[in-house]
Length: 469
Image 1 (tube, rainbow, N blue to C red):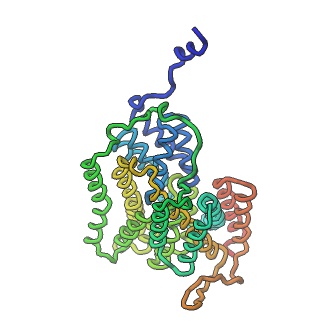
Image 2 (cartoon, helix red, strand yellow):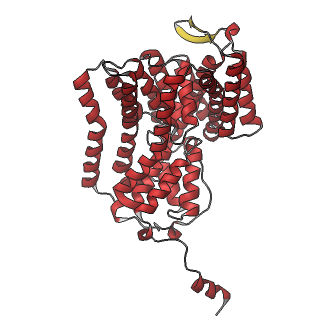
Image 3 (cartoon, helix red, strand yellow):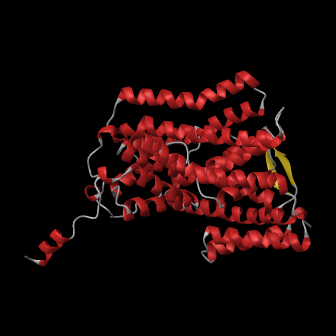
């Protein structure tokens, strides 16, 4: 017997079959992924790829990337949707529910605990210093997102023009974020359908290169029976999740009225769930405009505090909206105790943000083969990604105005209102911490968590030594 033949006999395949993957084992793996899901969607998807493709060999490279591309076409956090999709492929509906819910749960509990600490002890020097330091690092991280996504998306003059137009539209003209995304999608759809190569750059987080073949994975190359298109099942599950999503909002509005903070939270974040293309950084401009300026739920600096929480806890960065809802109800609790109202609003915000994600996956996943190689849809996603660069750049400018400067005035030129900082109101410690965070991320190539930790410690030290002066 040759050595090669002996190896084939003595070393059976290490890849389990689809039927060997127990639901209990999958739960443990999804819990592990959730506990490691720091660093935004790119880092979260990398963790999933390492564990599911390289380590467990449950799903092949091509299938993983195909699922990711589909999730990139949807509103909402693509990493959480990818977990839901793969969980559904492995163990039907219960697998998708378990994977998607576990991905969110650690972050929800962490931010809820931090929110309670924030409103209870936020004025204590150490706590105030912690969030003071976080803001500086968050600004640097948002700038990094602009550079990272821009490097991937702005490959030609058309994409640059879309990004610039999006920035001007939201920062100067105050065009609503959903309208910007819609216009970009229409432009990209038309360009893609026309076959223009300028709109065929692809989306997502890049191709991971050759890896585990689908045939060698536990799922194999075939399509599981439960994953085949079934219109009756799709309509049934879609109606069920639509009721779970909108039913509670209808009850709240009918019971408490449209002016209740709970009604406002339910309606606003439901609308947000339908326009969150491009990830948390992109939609935060929209959230900040509405939550800060329209509803008055929180201050600009508090928005930064919430993003700092989301950056330092596991789970999707969009979990920052949980903190927004928490503060909104805490300050307008109605007849409830403020903390009780805040916790209920935190749950409501999370519910209406993520239930639609399950709806998009369960309703559309069986039909994803129809989306493959669709030039029009790829063009739409490419243009949306370019517009998102401009929107995130606006977010970076907005954060910079409120992190570094204590005073911002609004100038009106030819009927257009522009926020301009007052130079004398610059906060020197904020400037130093922000420059330090930018240096750490861009020049020293430090990771997000070490940078956040360093600026947080520096902020606490400053407050302990000098207070808020």
